[in-house]
Amino acid sequence: MDGEIDLELYTISIIWLNKALEKLENNESIEEIETMFNESFNDLNRLYLDIVHDLNQEEVNLNEYYLFFRNGRKTFPHYIELLESIDNDQLEAVVDSLIILFNNFNKIAEAFTHEEVIR
Image 1 (cartoon, rainbow, N blue to C red):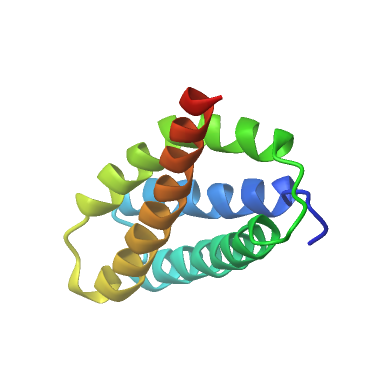
Image 2 (image 1 turned 120 degrees about the vertical axis):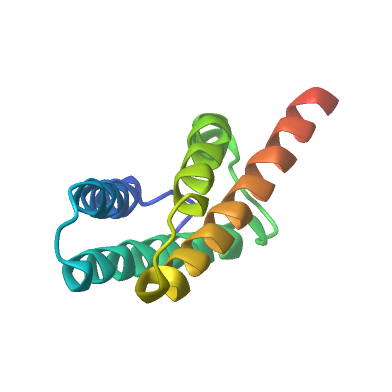
């Protein structure tokens, strides 16, 4: 990445996640749900790694990140809660991975909150 958040990738990953949650609620194919969760995880993980890389650069334009993480302070905990409520052995590994990833995003969001207070 080049200092910009790939919002298209984020949107696609959240769509995968929401569709998987909807299918899970409707008791649809666990294999299909697992695939959707994995797609979401792969996209979100790529985005997370890109963001961490960008934020570790010497010069960072934080404006776009502030907006993303300000919104994330609301959405990340929501997804953590939803994922933690899933009780399915077949989905456990990918759901746990998504929870860890959203917790990592949330930690960055909380750091941005702290940074805003300091400024």
